Figure (tube, one colour):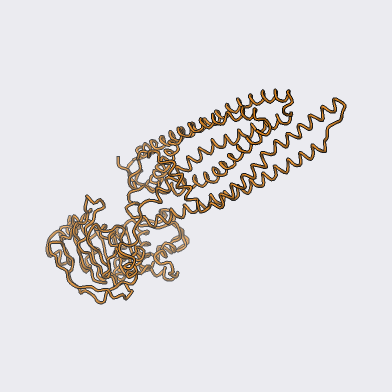
Length: 639
């Protein structure tokens, strides 16, 4: 069943297979390479914190030994307990633990800063990447998946970096330090205690291998479910209108079940680490207690050494458990990083197609004189074109446009525009009409370089647009689309989006020209009223009026109107049409229209069908021919 508000493929996709864990983790380490000095400092501070921490039990054991020996002296009548010595030992132990806590605080402060800088940098690069992505990416991906990469995946990555690196360093340093201190007490007891480490390591590696694929599947399912929620939330009106609540819930429940299944398995398998580690640790305790008691009876070690050793066994359990925990975080972090890097490595728009020298010349492109007026559009069969062009470098965009044998298809095997050629003089109003799927909007997308032609050439003032930086090219266009887009902000800010340096007076003048000023002033807050996320607190027609005001304010050389008045009533349409006629004076205009009554005064009407121009001329000329255009026009007014 088709989805009511889809944004492209991906809603019901199967979770991807596990990617290359080693390669993704290597990319992440390379990515944070610029913070290597801070990471090295964290390592040094962590080692110092660990050294002071692992010395504590050994020193504390001396206090226990002194207390036990003092009791024996008192029982034997040869002396008593040296409380002064014990007090000094305790004060020294306290100083060690305070130093360890201080270094641990510094370690956490540095690593938090590094992890948040990495997350900040990733979010910024994703945002910048979005601006460089081709339109075909946005038209073939669900929005929710991209949003999940910016929010969930980056947050997972930041949290994982903050905790995993510090935990890895601290755990490794603690394990090494504890083993060294245990060896100074008793090699035999150390051997008994550390025998559990390789066993634990093998079990951890086994569990990690089993749970890794579920962590990656969990991240993918989370991205899919975000896309569903976003679409279902924005499409509630259509969903309810067609009574598709059950179907929507069925799709959501399937994805939710997959997320539940992967999350349950990943958490359960990784959660099995702690009981296994505890069991092995208890076996180590038993071995240490028995061997320590025998050695103390023989006088090889003191009572305090047994206490210190047992504390070390307890201490080594904690970093081993942390290592088990950090493996989960590393898996989740790497899976998130993998998705982010996949996005950052996606294909980008090329700013320009030709050489840098040609790109530099394109910054000031123009023509010396007009190529003349008259009918200058043709199909392959006619093969005629009038006028000639030459670059003058005046730096001003005049608005002369040439389509030369343009051929294009979103899929190379399915051509939409077969052979489109047209010459447009500066200031002309060109209407493009035709049935749905004829290629009308595609022509506009090619003109603005949302896509590049498969073959042929599009020229603006004689310059191949592929040699012009996309941003510079689009600085000369103003668009009003059928699908209105307004952001969450005030009405004034939305209109000013067309020209950021516009004054309040200019914004209001543009609103008056678009016949929306009166409506704005009736709203609570007027021009300062805040539109919500989807601008649902104003009507569709009012939103379109606001986008028209935005286009008027932008004052660009070339104007594109794609069904710009489709959502307004007939009277308002006439008012806007009059304003548009004033706006289009002196500007090259391309008007795509299904309501043919709105383009009767166009300088030339291009009639498209199946990607070719089948007719062209003025409104009256085309009606007189009684051809394809006449059929389209009359069908809108026939009973």
